[in-house]
Image (tube, rainbow, N blue to C red; front, side):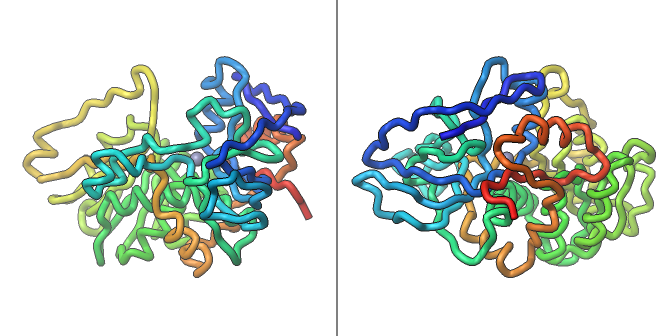
Length: 341
Ligand SMILES: [Zn+2]
C-alpha cells in the first residue's frame, strides 16, 4: 500500500510500504479522509528533520481486526482519536482522564504510517465508530474536539461577550461553539488578507472581526468595554493583548503553540490580579469528546463541510500542502480524500 512521508521544508514522498502483521489488540483502518492540520503544516515547514509519517485527523473503514478487538468490526466506519488516556493511571482512576495522555495511540509510538496513507494500523482504543456523516465531515471531528476542549476550558456562560483570537479552523469552530453555548457577542481577531476565514467567521455568528495587524485589540470599542472570555488559537505572543481586553473576572483560555523565544510572553500581573482574571490552558491530549463532536456535526451546530476549501488525493499531497501554505486568502481546511467524486 501507499503512504506519505514529510520532511522539512515542504518535501513529501508517497511510497509503497509493506503492511506489518496486526497485533491482537490492533485494527487496520482503510483511510477514507484525512484533513490537514496546522501541526502538519509546521512539520512540513520546519518540524520534520527526517522523513516521517503524518496525518492524524482521520476517518475510514475497519479493514481487519486483531483477535482481541471487540469494540469495532470489519466494515465499521470510524474516526480515530489522536491520543488516549491510560485507563490504569492514577489520574484516570481518580476520575481525571483528561490529565493522562499515556494511553495507546498511533501517533507517538514510532508508527510506520499515519493518516496520509491508504491504510493505517491503530490500537483498538482509538477507534470511535459512527454513522451518518461523510468521510470528509468526519475527518473534522478531531480538530472539533480541540475547539470544544478550548470552549469548555473557557467556561463560556449565557450572555458572555467572547473574543476568539486566530480564525483558523479551530478558532472558527470556537466562534460557532461560543454562540451555541449562549454567548451574546462573539468577536474574532485575525490577520488581514484571510478573506475566506473572516467571511466564515461572520457567517458562523461573529459580530465583527478585528484585523489584528491593522488595529490594536485594546482600541476596539467593545460594547461592554471588554469581553468576558478570550479564546486564543494564535501564537502565545497574542496572550498579553487578550488579557488587556478581559473584563473583570474574565477568563483567557489558550492553545496556541510557539517554540523558542516565541514561547515566552510578558504581561502585567497587576492587571490579572486586580481584575481577578484567569489564564487557563487547553490541551486536547488525550483526544476526548468524539461522540459529542460527532453529534455536533450531525445536528448542524458545526457545519463541518463549510470549512473544507480544498480536497486532494493522496498522490498529490506534496503539491496540495505547498499550495495550501501559500494560499492565505481562500484556504481554510484541506482534506485528503481516498475516493474523490
Ligand atoms: Zn490536528
